[in-house]
Image (cartoon, rainbow, N blue to C red; front, side, top):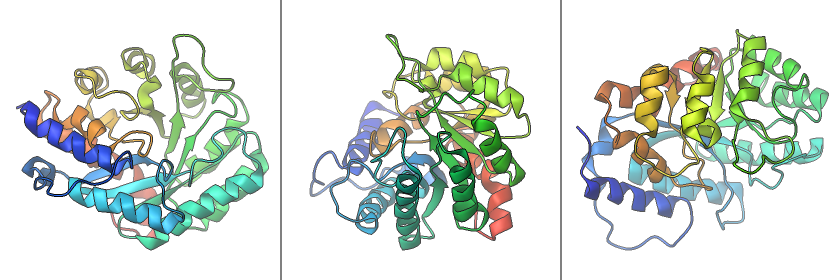
Length: 300
């Protein structure tokens, strides 16, 4: 059954606070019981848009709001988001070090996702080994706008990830006017995924224009869609489940660019079965991460 409007708006208000947009108000209502039903894992988050000085302080803020919304675990990438496009190898390492520090502060709540750039392939492979193969991180991405992801520079990075069965979160967008230089679309991700059927990809933002993005990736089974980044419009999740199946839809918030709860509302308020909501809000992500978590002896 769909939720009543009051319950959904309660959750959205709490999530806006989680994005660091305003100060927490006193006397907030108790956590709605609806959030207690799910083991919620968020595949897409950053430490940007928060005011605290250190990674440890910023992740403390996010975990506080995770607690209020019943979010069990966060997949964190890109540190402070200082270098969204064309980072140097040193800047890439700085961003990953910030994530490592935040994840170390809350190892039972936060897993890291390595930030790589196809501008610097060899250095990215070395950073993958440092952070994932020989380190605690469990995912790749969000891969951003250095080169469109159908570029051959992505191939060795994907092969590296596929060898350890590590999923890749790829930023995608479909802008009405024009994408930024090097910014990927779902069409580009389809090309890459078809070249690497053994790899698992997550289509970040579903291209923003989700009605098109869902259709574009529909026939490529090694691409899951991720719901973060767009407004909490009714019908998004329903269409994704109808066209892709609930097993290929994953919850992410893109906090702090968006809020936890506005993106959760897309799922919790959707007219889909409870079993589908459980998969989208955490079950599908845990399944994709299971091989690397098991290899590292980490809980899922």
